[in-house]
Image 1: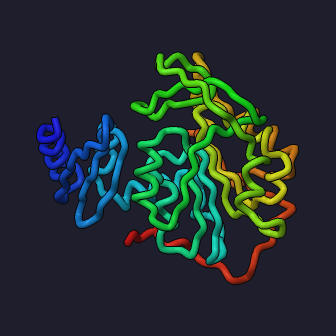
Image 2: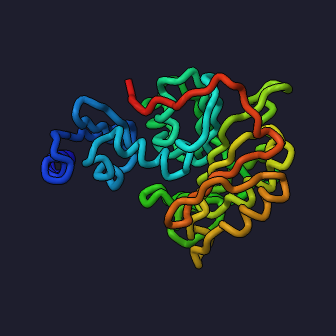
Length: 271
């Protein structure tokens, strides 16, 4: 399988990306991770289905994800802080590798967290289920299609009972009392409203919230755009960007709008 995958990836890079690339399957226990090389760049991905997203180049894919949330439209301090809920392989966080950033990835899938930590060496990773309250709940694990969620969508029979935390419980362990968070990114596969409801106190200290509101909630796969917009508007956030397909939005906390005059564009080049 590894040889077939590598040959297919090599040919697709050559045909579509016009550069060389190859892939190696790495066994860790019962799991397989995939290490890919494209034009001198290296990236770890947790599922073979994601390997082919990088045939046009690793940096190109990383920048595409970054821009899809509209982050390139805002000025950020050099010591930017980022929390990514549903960080997956760390592709969004990889945009902050060369900044003096404090970046934290949160996910429930161990393979994805391993890749995120490998792809973003300056990151911290946390395995946690983020919800509107602390307690226990069921988690539908469907990582093959990046569909794992705390909202049952009937995409997998792998249901796990896990501890849950609210962001209001987590953020005080991340930020000092006088600190703010520059970017909170949420990609919770339909559970975005619950994440935000459990962050009402924390959101007062967040400058920007980037949210995936695409149609992924529950069996009917509905969008969370209206719910997310309503919750954030009630907290004093204003939408400053929406992707062309309407699936990703960026909100700004108007009470924290003023930032330091010392700002810069986050470099997208990777080490």
